[in-house]
Image (tube, rainbow, N blue to C red; front, side, top):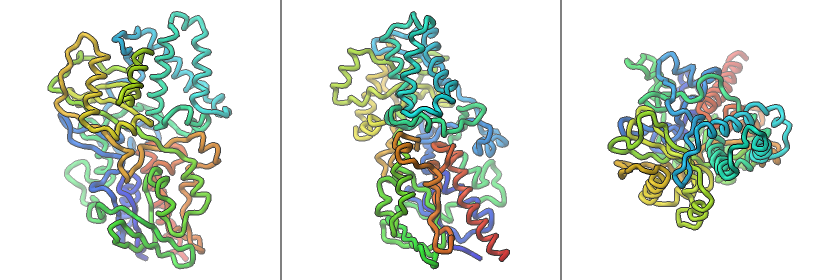
Length: 478
């Protein structure tokens, strides 16, 4: 048996599925990739002293993390220097929140999110409502009596933005309280970087091309991949004939026995109505509408040399009321949601700013030069008594504007609860009348617990590859 298998998307899930199938002997395989590169939402590019990751950046944890399992034996990881739990909180008037106070405020948040999980699992509201209620109760205790109301409120607004960047939500009032717990954290170091190689290393490992010299059984995935192939329609047949016909926007057509779709949830939300013929069954449409995806963008600035002290890790931005009113009335009001600038490991002259949500999308509609000017305005406003030169180079990401992604990663929202759907529903394959899967779904949004991560995406690619391998092994024994 030599089934024709078509994989849509050469991101982490697509590469994982393809390399698994090829290793198992299924080589009648074609990959259609809308971009001109392998990687998807992993995009490592040259910048500064070496490279930066425009998308996925860290290996999050060690236990039960397939990225860690694949890379740890090859000594590719290092612990991130910048500790995002130890923020230097700086106000827009240049005032720094005393470290002792900022540590207590952060501790309150980690306690709320970490030790109230049982209560949160039964909560019938948003993550934001839950956190707000608990945070207010913390502030009423004597331990927090020395922290003034304005500082506490400014910190709450900062942490709201920070948490949105983790969830990829526009607001923590959109994030489901109990749904927040669907995500499983892997024990171990949550911020492992890929040294000076970037996250693209994971593809070299999956293709058995790392380290050098390349192994004899290395996979040349480019031989199977057709680039700049945006899929316009997937015509699947629910009858006994399991042939699937995939048409691209350039009118090329590919026929297959099985299709594994790894397109992002953002693309499915925008195009599922025209992407599939016949239309998807209600349970799939409900999952696409109910699961949510947001936007997280990065702002990279390279300087000739650091203007910051040697052990400085960055700063987190807290806005005073008067400054915030000024920002909100300006043409670049999106700058309010740039919540910090932080150092980047293996990049001694680079800072990385972060923004998410609606303003992250608004930033994408602003020229790159204007965005750079705003970043410099922010740095000069918050860092007092320091001469900050113009950056040597600048790069910002645009994950929502790109029609091949339409967002960064998925999360569980209040809509997910309302429509009573799940990743399992999104992962269900489309089958023919004989129960044979003809269109399968992979990608981070289809993972029940490791959604939003590369290790989750890889697991889903393996899941769908193994579904086909198991199918044909059973057929061979009939």
